[in-house]
Amino acid sequence: MARAASQRVIGRWQVALAIVFLLALALLGAFALRPGATGTSAFKSTPIPKSFSPSAVLSISASNASAPLTAARSTVPGLVQEYERSTRLRPLYDRLRSGAAPTPEGKLALYLILRECANVQGGGVDRRQYPDAKTLSASISDANPDKQMRLRIAEELKARCEGFDGVVTSRAELHALLEESAAAGVQAARVRLLGDELIGTMKPGEGLSISDFQIEALRQAVASGDPDAIQGAGTLLSNTFADLVIESSQTHEAVQQGAAYYAWQLLACEYGADCGSSNTWLRMVCATEGDCAAMNLQDAIMFYQVSPSEAQLIDQYRSVFRAAANGDWSGLEFARRPGGTGRQYYFTIP
Image (cartoon, rainbow, N blue to C red):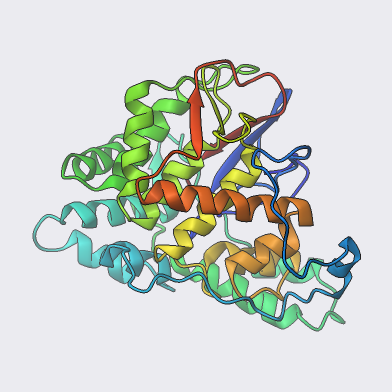
């Protein structure tokens, strides 16, 4: 749940890590940055009933929440959902470590916990950095009416990893947990392994390289109905590829990748991802940046992250991606030609 490197971070749904190239490589944070895509839509625009002039945006209030994008029935595996919504992860970690070996779903949940909170031997894995309340307090004016709320949220976020100071893991253990989970059919684990494979093909200035087999695997993940798998697959499909351009079947224009990234994140909300007020990224940007009015991920993206034209494009893409999740990929074409000829986007799954 990306613009230039100087702009703000978004993440999983809990929303993701994003690395954006603007002709030259720039490293970005643990969550995707605001997309800066502009220009012609990859889909034909349609008249909007009762449309308003552009100045109507001056009357928008993020505190007037839109209807939440929630699934009629949550399809999030129970342990992964528990991981996403936990205020403290140590009890879940202890439960998964005790007794019999965890289930395939449990191995994915254990991977997520260790990646977020444990110390990784040899490094090479970025732990999520939650804001320190004391440091944050010094940067917020005492006259700011939201200061105490922001500090409370910062403390609550950091509490997720309380009790992990002595917990150590390794890249090998993390990889093994994903492999075993994926081998048992957990699509979200398989997508994360594919993400590692794709990042290994990155050629600065050109893009990633993706095979037909990997494309099909990502399509299967989208069709799985698992919001974590949908979010992860969509994140990877939003990248710049050296040998692939994803384009509109209608106009044959390339899909704008920053808008596509957000559209995939919001589609995952429809399948049961945590996109409400407890969403980790939503709480993170409130604590660190003061963007606190939005009560759900959709409103935060549409109000704080993108322009009105990008918001409309995200909504168009989401309709096409929703059809793809239901087995209809006719709105998209996978064209085998170089894609790294302009602004470049590199996203990783948080």
